[in-house]
Figure 1: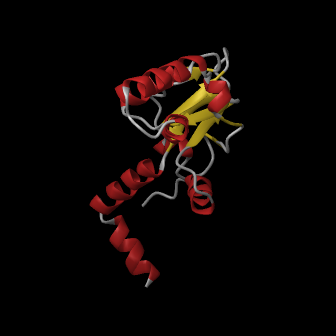
Figure 2 (figure 1 turned 90 degrees about the vertical axis):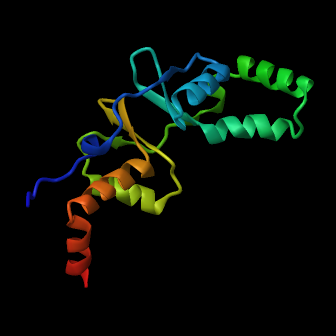
Length: 156
């Protein structure tokens, strides 16, 4: 068995979809729907991470203002999303990890916080994102390889 340290870069999603800070929330909503993702890193013109917008942020906007479905409500929501910039909604300066940080650091951050995603950066530029689902996929692969059972037996 290898003693190599698993890094954030080894488990992060790298086909990152980002938005520029000047984009509107209707663009974010379209990306959430089209790509079936829940978090979008917000970057400046150089690709440096400035924040994150999640579907939970979008839902707060849509459900916080309107409780009933009607044509007028839908028109209101659409106008609201067209006028709100992601910079006005995003979580600014989110907790991040560097791509070369050990996976154990990422796990600790998830255990200590209620994060749904952690952006991964290199030289301040967004290069990936890690969610609990990504960690579950790693655990699933470890289970397939018999490593989970070995860890359980070692713990006992």
